[in-house]
Length: 81
Picture 1 (tube, one colour):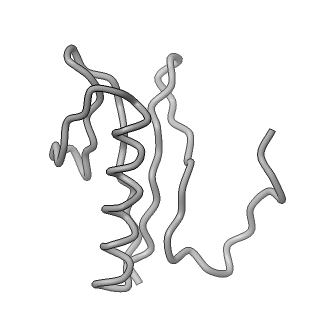
Picture 2 (picture 1 turned 135 degrees about the vertical axis):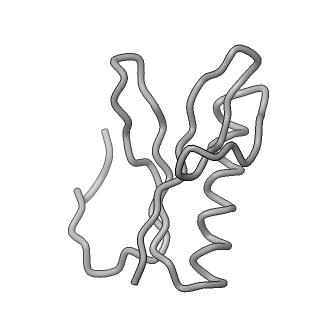
Picture 3 (picture 1 turned 90 degrees about the vertical axis):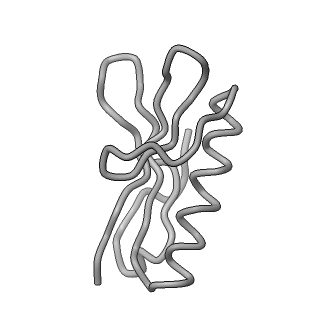
């Protein structure tokens, strides 16, 4: 089963949602972009069965995985702080 991660990162005029370097959507706020990315990830998982996540780029250049769709069996923390 394929896995992919949609990325949400800041650009000059808002936040872009991308997959493998290709821009899919542009939103004014980070929260809007995360919502779009999560919906796209859920749709991809439902339609093709691909495990799809959403990561947000943070200030230090890294990214944080904030949503997972179809990643059953993978261990994660019990909760977020």
